Image 1 (cartoon, rainbow, N blue to C red):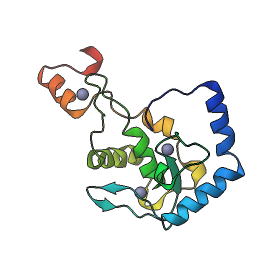
Image 2 (image 1 turned 135 degrees about the vertical axis):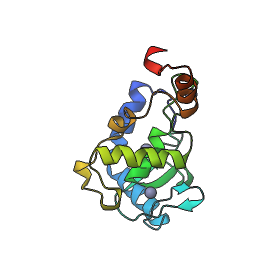
Image 3 (image 1 turned 90 degrees about the horizontal axis):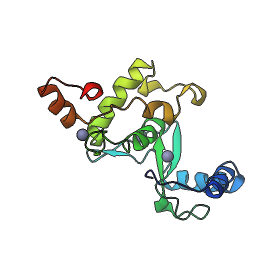
Length: 158
Ligand SMILES: [Zn+2]
Ligand SMILES: [Zn+2]
Ligand SMILES: [Zn+2]
C-alpha cells in the first residue's frame, strides 16, 4: 500500500479491525491459502520461508472484506522490504531501493548491523518495527548518489 492518507475514522476502524477476531480468522485463512509459506518473489524465485509470517494488505479498498488478492503472505524480512521499497529518493522521487534484488542486499546489510540473522530470526518481540527500518533507507537512489558523487557532493550538502 502506498502513502495514501486515511481519515481519523478510517484509522480507528483499521486499528480495531486488526486487533479483533474477524481479522485473526481472515489472516489465518489467507495463511492456509499460501500454504504457510512466504509469497515474495525476488528475480522470479519464491522465498517460501515458513517462519515469522505476516499478512500484508496490498490495498485497503475492501478492508474488513478482503479478497485473497488484496492480501500477501510475507515472512518478516520481506514484509519489511515491501514497506521499505515504497520509500522514495529525495532527489528524483523514484523508489530508493529500486528493485527487489538491490533491496534484499540492502536489508541484509542493515539487519547485519542490527545483529539480526535472517536465517535464524529472533522472536517477534526482538524484531524492529517497519518504521525503524524505513528510517534506514538511504535518502537518495543509487543513480542520484552516483550523480552527486561525480560532482563531489552528497545529498546533505547538495
Ligand atoms: Zn504490510
Ligand atoms: Zn520471504
Ligand atoms: Zn534518485
